[in-house]
Image (cartoon, rainbow, N blue to C red):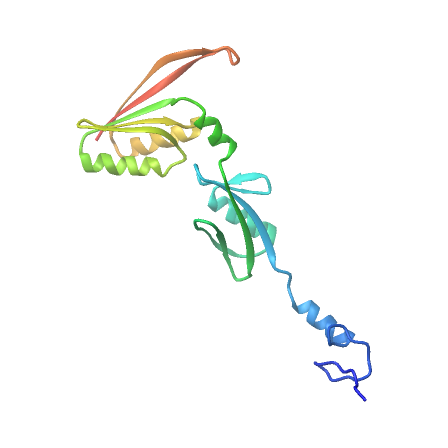
Length: 199
């Protein structure tokens, strides 16, 4: 006669749950951890990541995830179609690529700033590369025998960062602005700012 037994402890003629007695099943269930799942959205323009309806740069998101998951997060790696959260615990990441509302707003605008870069060709090209990596919406880049003209959209905070970088390099900088229109809703003039940089 066939006898039912627990495949772990060998107890016979007892009620089994998935081939285990209740005691062994409880022990196994407690040792199996549910796989963590994180949903992220990546802005393909500025590179920021959205988690729980809030946008973060990568470093700030690492701190938020560590706090929420109570884990040590080593890194967040973004690939073409997926993302990986590097941790000692296995984390399933669901990644969706979108354009954030801030970038949509700036993409729909005409350019607000012009950065004219003049001087050494190699240094000028290096500066252009650095600006491209920032949270700036570049509407157009024109290259001529005199240098580069960048037509940009950026918020005031990023504008201050750009000025800080340029001044830290001790470049010769000239800033001017031109009246473009009058904003009836805000009741103030709107200007286009030109930054001339001589390297």
